[in-house]
Image 1 (cartoon, one colour):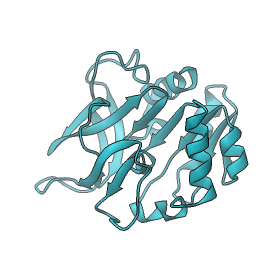
Image 2 (cartoon, one colour):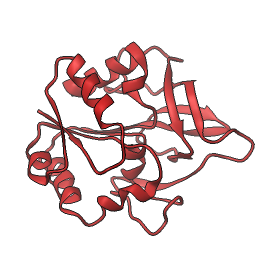
Image 3 (cartoon, one colour):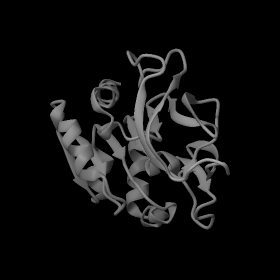
Image 4 (cartoon, helix red, strand yellow):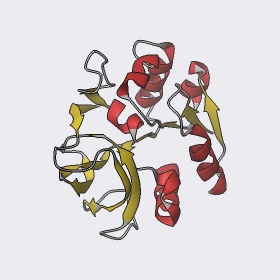
Length: 196
């Protein structure tokens, strides 16, 4: 069973429907015991980093950490990916999970913000999450903040400046874009996650 963490930051229904369309059992939950016991965990989200206050120091955050310690695959989507980093200047008083180093910052001046729409990925070799996705494939973004480039960057998007469009380490994954809104490519990425 895949636990989709419901911390009040939206998009849970479309993520659940996409996973179920692929034939995977998924439940939307705010129950820490369900999250901790799940075979896989998805942390979705849209909007302001302030929404992650529901995770800071909470039993739900502890359940996510417990799932990671048990080696369960975890996927952060959009705001959920940003939460995997140390912090965001959008709500500097709130800590991220700190699984990846660095801080999320606003998109650079000179580009339209938020970044909404389809954009191309530059995919790093060897990514399991993005296996089978063609170089230059386009996916759907909706965000105003960006994650830094890190050693674990699995895909880059260039919008004003390059940023991490996907990160990957062991069984921990994050995507800035919305696979549940990215057509067949997005479904393939979600299916890859379900097989990792």
